[in-house]
Image (cartoon, rainbow, N blue to C red; front, side, top):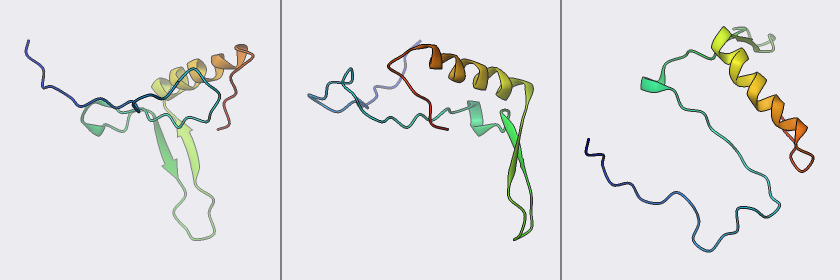
Amino acid sequence: MNLPKRKPTRLKDYDYSSEGAYFITICTKNKQKILCDIVGDGAHDVPKINLSPMGEIVEKYILSTNKIPELTVDK
């Protein structure tokens, strides 16, 4: 299968093993909303995230990284 050539997404000459903060994005096929529902529609409602079963699996694996002493998940 021939895949399109993509440009590199990493910074040239950057040491990704060094300390730093990283923002991670998870993309789903065709931008499907399969990880959660966001509820709360009023100006006074604080939006609440209801994880789907798939979202709970993703959360489990993200939080499992807390077992790595050098790594911290903020949110």
